[in-house]
Length: 209
Ligand code: PRP
Ligand code: URA
Image (cartoon, rainbow, N blue to C red; front, side, top):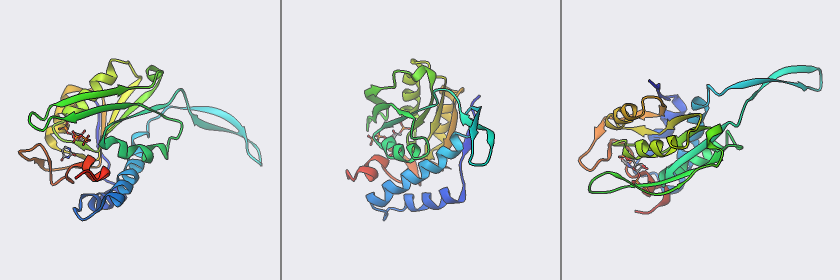
């Protein structure tokens, strides 16, 4: 069974309050999503494998550590996951980035896939899937199923706000992945929106409503 981590560091909680506020405009909203992603990435990469190397400091030879292997691939779920990419690349600039395009059918709430482009060497990488919102869980479950077909070394999911319904569905469908969220909210409303949530993440990032 994968672990569920609620990354409730005070800096994240503070930024999340600003993010939830309906008076926060798109420019600030984008900056906050990116900053929260950076802070969460620090936690989500805590278990990366290290190897020892020898380097020369100005003073002496030193045996020290670097991250080993082919490292990471980030896969944002379009559109809203795109808002997290800059923030995670700030910490891991050499990571590859794949994209999965999904939107929720407004009537059925089922995910509809329209795009999938993953790194060619994904089998050698640890994947972190990015999407700020885990509502019913349908989009994350579907995206992870697509990625699993390509046999990456491991998969983690990094979201910002989760509904209990989505978290339960995701951990049931993919019990092998680790999940990182900044907040676990109260519930979903009748339209599948997270309560209290932050509204439609894609629309708030891209100013489309
Ligand atoms: C939002 C969000 C997630 C999905 C979560 O995307 O970014 O991808 O809904 O809902 P779920 O857990 O019930 O699947 P949306 O479908 O609004 O598309 P967009 O990002 O292009 O606006
Ligand atoms: N997608 C969003 O952007 N917000 C929600 O509350 C639920 C799904």
